[in-house]
Length: 68
Image (tube, rainbow, N blue to C red; front, side, top):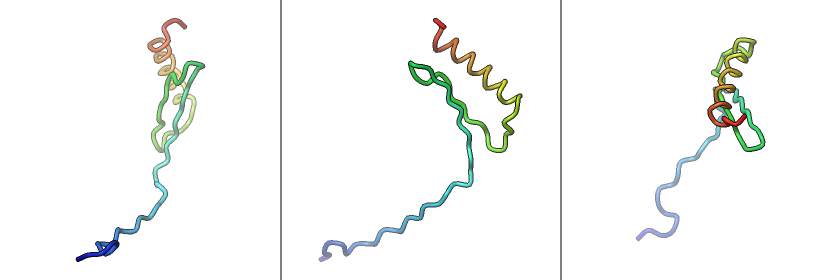
């Protein structure tokens, strides 16, 4: 007969930092989040990236908040 705590011991869990870094861009208004976008690892945050993100934001605003 096995007593309490006599079963197999659980494995130890180790926490480790992820090697992946991601940038999240979030745009919101007073009603909530309008658009969010993850920037791929290694992508430069430059003029071209921001132009693409703003174009996506414009499309999201027209789709989600057509009254604006």
